[in-house]
Image 1 (cartoon, rainbow, N blue to C red):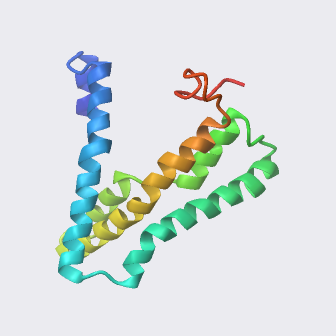
Image 2: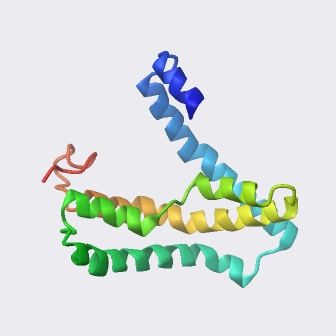
Length: 161
């Protein structure tokens, strides 16, 4: 974080370079890491029902949180679910922090116990296998709301209603 910010401040990294690095990380490097983690775990420990359920449970968890947020939390606090704030709150509440942060926690929690680190990272990877497509599909739909598909400017950002 700090090194990256310093590189941007010193103009060693342009906004275009940062965008391309982000695309590379999320489109290539993270999926490769997740796939490798899952393959290594299956090769070493096999695959059981519990592991196979993790991606499905990720989708169900996010779906349940979505329903609770839109049907209980937002009405309770008087927030319109169709507003920009409502959509932002819904996405943040429904999807939580699925990404590299749980991997960092696994590494920190089980440091020195390599078998536990690899198993926990494999479970996080399986979770993200369900979470990621659901987030980028349904989460994007929720965040953008009803956009006019014929207007390409509305597809790239939320409207200011």
